[in-house]
Amino acid sequence: MKINLKIVLLLLLTFFSVKLIAQKENNLLPFSNKLLLNPSFAGLNNKTNLWTGIQLFAKSNQVVNNQFSLTYDAYSEKLKGGFAFYFQQGLLGEVNTNTSEFGFSYAGPAIKIGEGKLIPSIGTHFLYATKQWFVFSIDNLLNKKFEPPSPPGEGFGQYNIFKPQFGILYDSPVSQLGISATIHFKNNFADPENQQNNVATGFVFYYAKKTMGLRNELVSQPFQVYPEIIIFYQDDFFMNRASIKVEHIDRTYALFIQNNFTDNYHALGGTFGWRIDNFRINFSSGIGMPVISDEIAFFGEITLGLIIPRINYSEINPWIPQKKLY
Image (cartoon, rainbow, N blue to C red; front, top):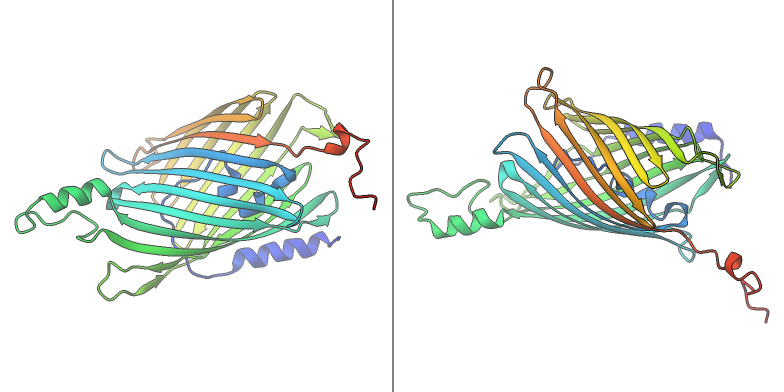
């Protein structure tokens, strides 16, 4: 099925301009796992992917956020698209809060546009937040008459968030362009009034352009070089990252600049990774620039990925029929 590219651009702009409700739990942008940026990456190019990693953000000695993630995605012939499962667990150090999140998504079916394809996606996540476990235990050992409970309050459970998610991705041999939106419905049950809090939707914009790569199914160069831009926007929070990536046969290198315009910190950093057969190991880190930033922030990520390409059995055993003859 073919659609005019002008219609696609109009849909992207319309999708990006919608004003709904959401909340940003932390300011961590993933470096290696694109599925966390846009659910349309699920099962892309008929591959099966398993990614796990941990991210760290430290703005001062007392403010530390971290997040562990585990994702699985694959392509399904029966579903004619990709599907994904998510698990994330994090710490919001400034408010002594632990978060646990589960989710799933579906991407497809793909729509042919020129040499590329347009992939819509939909998904949902559920996040449950509690008081940090160690802080909660210590507070229960202390006499509340003399020592008031630590933030965020006396109770263990704090809130939950239901997160519908939508994405769209244009993927071609030379570029990728995508936008995703996550709507947050927050139920703050630690509040005596038990009110539901609605805020603005979070948007993620992704763009990457490959300057070298596959031509006629053959590797024209032993490496790929491409710029990558990620933008996150939600109401009063604006953050972006621009990078130059080089993917060699068994190595990955990247230099990036990351800007948090809301908190006014700007950081430089890099990524180094290895490819061992189907495994990927990536290390990313950056530090805030002292002159133009209000505070010196440090952030980093370690990820481990397993990428299994689709097996074409007709090429391995061409004499075996694909369908039953009778």
